[in-house]
Image 1 (tube, rainbow, N blue to C red):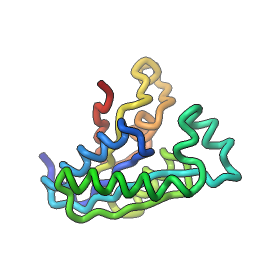
Image 2 (image 1 turned 90 degrees about the vertical axis):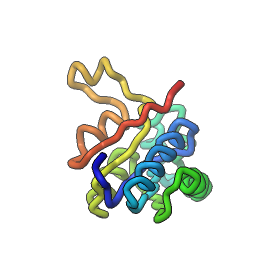
Image 3 (image 1 turned 135 degrees about the horizontal axis):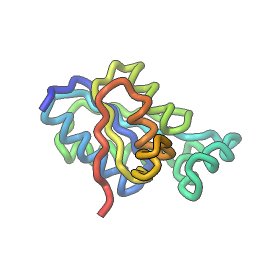
Image 4 (image 1 turned 180 degrees about the vertical axis):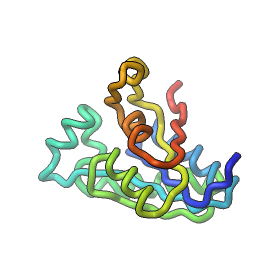
Amino acid sequence: MTDYRTVVVGTDGSESSLRAVDRAGAVAAESGAKLIIATGYSPPENDSRAQDVLGAEAYKVSGRAPIYAILRDARDRAKAAGAKDIEERPIQDAPVHALVDLAEQVGADLLVVGNVGLNARSALIGRVFSVPGSIANKANIDVLIVHTTD
């Protein structure tokens, strides 16, 4: 396995995304890497944008209040997985842009996301509509899409 120096993981607080945090924490622990846990959110005045992108799941990333609890829970999970150097980042942007831009800004060499929403059929025909699929297409670094569903 490659030794990574900086790992970025995205979470929206769902159990599925926290499984990705668990894996990112383990990878960071194995590599002695810094782990940056991020969540993108839309301010209340932009709730319609979150609704357009995330549909019924938009409530998880609208407004600032739930963001800090989401990040705190994710930090606890990453620590339990062995990560030592952990940073939290709330980012006011849609998830794909937030994670890809953050990874570039911090010089990350691995970006970790869960597979929820990955639509294999649309990916095969060249159209990627999901957050994980879009991240995999836009990122210029390694992307680990963690199987997070039962």
